[in-house]
Image 1 (cartoon, rainbow, N blue to C red):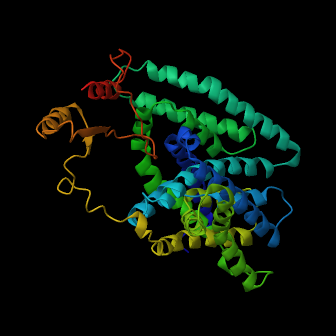
Image 2: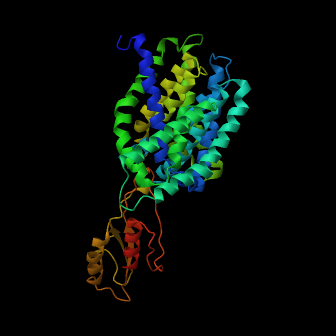
Length: 433
């Protein structure tokens, strides 16, 4: 055997350390404000995409042989609710459907899915413990979250403000942040959830994107390249293909996998009643949101460790999650919204009419790009009958956050505050120009 039994405890310890650090990194990259800014269609798809997969996961749990320990259905439903935001974004970009309505709705909904999956994971951890301590765990968890939002986050923001602009963050800052993450994990473990929940919450509290980027730069390669492969090894060792059909027919196992795959699609179809999506678009969104991330495996693994999922249920769910992610890309190639991707061949300067307004999008990275753009616009010989409207787009690299942002600035504002950061001062100078 590649991993004999006497080494399994060491491997499992490394896997649990990987989970805690992975949860901390996900918390750093999660933008709660982006979730709150999702549109009406995305919210409708998200609502049905959470309820229907959770109900399907609950049905699968009770239809298979299971233990009497409570909370197992939460792990099954939570695993089906997950949608990998970064993985889905890469698939949409490769298939050239990122800018379509379906791609935008699926990507926005995936933000809500991931955040709700963390809530379901915490709920599953609390309900899978002793029935006498469930209420205590819920009350303590809510109290700790209130403490983090109203006391710990302002404290971290105050510490960040005390750091001089442009100085950067030393190793002392990074180590202190990691110690705080560990303390947060110990607290959540003591109140009845899991250390990774505390690490995730602490990652959400970090207020500075520059600090987030500094931490991710030091952790990402080690966690994703060394520790997380160990976690997947543990998942593979826990998966037993031989017991999948134990006590049930092979047909039941196949139907369970198919229902797990169809959960997101059924949720998207249900959302057509109040989201305005057509049936074809809803099916496409449902297929796309079947893209799973590492979080789905994390939920199933914790459910197995908590003994809330039997080996049979765990193995079936793991195979289902793998099958979902594998078939997403081939199915996405069948969706080709040609009417939304037709190139505008006549939208060129040569084809423009003489007495029409010409709109120009000027992409600006820094203040050095402003003079050439102004010279180009001045040499274009615009007139009152044939004016030129220039729209300035400043391109800023967002560090520490996965989703993109679009901020509209008011050109009538004047003056620069002394408290602005370097990027904000540069933006003010571009607007004034």
